[in-house]
Image 1 (tube, rainbow, N blue to C red):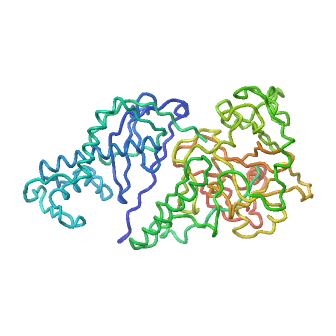
Image 2 (image 1 turned 90 degrees about the horizontal axis):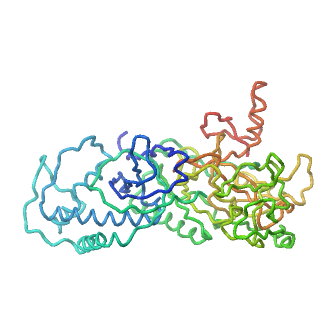
Image 3 (image 1 turned 180 degrees about the vertical axis):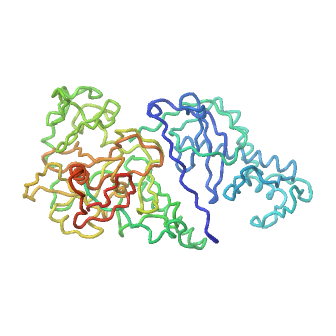
Length: 540
C-alpha cells in the first residue's frame, strides 16, 4: 500500500528446551549486527560451551534495550571497535561498493549502509556537507573525488584508542553479564567476529479465583494497529520523552525489582492509557481507611527456627497453620528447593511463606513471592487486545513473577464500581463459600489507580500463567492474602503473559461438554484471545 511504513513482524519464538533453564551459559562473543528500518540495533551473540541447537548452531539475536547490563557493555564495546575499523577503512580509500547484496530487501538498507561504512565516508570526505544529503552514486562503483585524508573526528579517534586499550586489557578484565537467549532470527548482515574470552553467564533466575477485563481498549481499526497515525518528528520526540519519563518514574518505585519497560511496534502510542495521578506499586497494598492493618495480627504469626534455609516442612514452625500435604499426608512446602511453585496447592488454601520473625535467611526456598521480581517485564502494545505484558527471557514452569497490587478495599465498595473501573478488581475470595453472606471480612484489590505491571496481563482461555494466594506478613484468617502470578509451563522469550480471568468458567465448559452447548452468560464480553479452545466469551 503506497505510503505505508515498514513495520517489523515479531521474531519467531523459539523453545530452547527444558535443559536450557538449568545449565550455565557462557558468552563467546559478538559475531554480527543488524539495523532495522527504525534504526534499532540487534546483535548476534555467540554462546560458548553449553547450550546448542540440534543443528549445531548456538547464536541468538539480542536487542540492546532488552539485554542485561553485562551484555549491554559488551554491545557498546563492539560498537566502538567496529566504528574505529570502518573509519580506518574510510581513511584508506574513498571507494564504496554499490552493487546489490544477496537477498537485498528494503528493510536491510540500514544494515548494508552500516557494513559499507557509509556514515564514516561522509564524515571523512564530506565534512562540511549536509549529513542528511546522500552521496551521488550513479554507477555500480564510483570514487568520491580524491583529497588528502583529514584526521578522523575526535570521538572516532577516541573510540579507536579506547578499543585498542580494551583489547590489550581484555585478558585481565573478564566481562560479566546475565542473559538467557532471546528468539533467533536469520542474519541480515555480518561483520567480522569479535573474539572474546569465554565468560560465565548464568541465566537470570526466573521470577484460582480471579476475574478482570482487558487491560486497555483494542485499537479502533486494523489500519491503526498496523500503520498507526501519522505524526511529525517533533510529536514523535515528545512521545518518546513520555515513555522514558514514565519508565524513570516507575524505576524509583520498584523496591529492588528488575526494570519495567515499554514497547510498541504497532502504532505511535508510546505509553498505555492510565488514570490521572496513577501510582505505581510494585509490592503490597494501599489500604482503605476502613480496612484493618495486618499489623493488628502480627502477634499471631508463628515463626520457624530453621538455620539458614528451611528444608523440612514438618520441622518448620511457620508451617503449622498450613494445610498443604503430599499424597501420604505429610506436610510440604508450596515450592521446590529451587524456589519454583510445585502446583500442589488445593483450592481454598494459601501458600504460607516464612515471615520476618523466622530465623531463616532471605534466600530460603520458602521465601519466593515476597522477594523482589528478578526478571525484566516489558509492557507492549498487542495487535488486538490493547497493552499486554511479556518477559524478554525464557521462563520455566513454576517461576513466580510477582503479585497483583492495588488499593485494598471492602467488598461492599468494590461492588459499587462499574465499567472500566470494575475491570481492575480482583476479589480475595479464597476462603469464601457459596452460601457465605457475611460481608464484614470480604476484601478486594482495586488496581485502577494503584498497581503494577500485572494490571496489564490480558486474558486467554489457554493461559500460560495462573494466580495463587500466598501470605507471609499476615495470617490466613484475616482474608488478606496476596495474589501471586506463576508460569504454568515453560514460556519462551517475548511471549505474551496471560491468565484466565474466569477460571471457574473453564470448569463449567469442561463439565458441559457432550451435554449441551454452553451459552454466553449475561454480561460477558466477546473474547479475543484467539486460542484454539477459546470459549468465545469472558465474564468480568
